[in-house]
Amino acid sequence: MHGLGNDFMIVDLVRQRPPTDLKERAQAWSDRRTGIGFDQLIVVLPPDDPDADFRCRMFNADGTEAEQCGNGARCVARFVVDERLTPKRHLALQTGDGITRTELLDGNRVRVDLGVPSTEHGAVPFVGAGQSLAQDIELEGQRVQVTPVGIGNPHAVIFTDDVATADVDGIGAALQRQACFPKQVNVGFLQTSDDRSGRLRVYERGVGETAACGSGAAAAMVAAQLHERWGEEAEVEFGDGGKLGVQWQGDGSPVTIEGPAQLVFKGQLLL
Image (cartoon, rainbow, N blue to C red; front, side, top):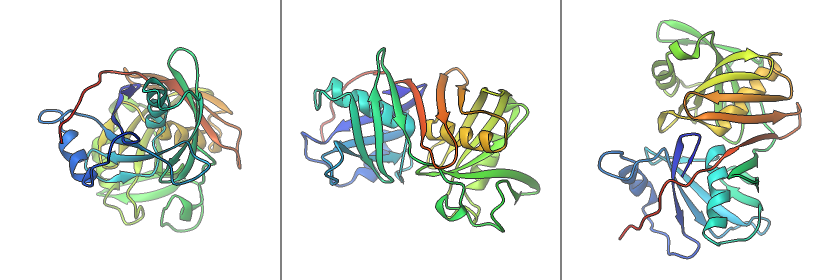
């Protein structure tokens, strides 16, 4: 499945016994030449939390496990209904960061509540001097200004005048090696077009640049609003992948994203 080009392999482990080596299998299956090819493997399991409908584990292409994924949650919300695991259109998904709530809308669109974001450094996590919103980082001969945002997983938002020419791979990869991000970081490069729209490219930890990133759009909304570039609603464009609607009513409120979830194909694997 994919959400705006950010693609996933989703496996029903509610009705099947889960393999024990998911990290290694994610690494093998994610290869786009010798495997199936995807940004993340998402397995759907029975919940541990009595308040949740399902539990999701999300593995990046390199085998590392992610706490949260906005585009992935949208695809899971459609997957469990299509696979007749539930008739519910409102779901509580247990993830590595807690409960993510989804609503299945008409036309394959899904709304996701990603919870209350934080720019408090300990919550991101980010290790830096002071608690100022924007932080300067010396990065291999250049100074980069980032806004750290926690949205279930760590993000760094960088404002740019032209997202097309931004050094996404170079800066994104370099920030993974910085001690100031102890759990590494998803790096968003945001070009704001006006007070309610912009273009975004995201370098995801454990994957590299992806076609889209739901939690990255949420982090971009938080950073843009706090820097007084956007209001409470915005539309984020991801290259050729399409657009994602984002809403945030400010401090103490959850961020919601809304966009499509598309089935690409189904298959079977013999383990």
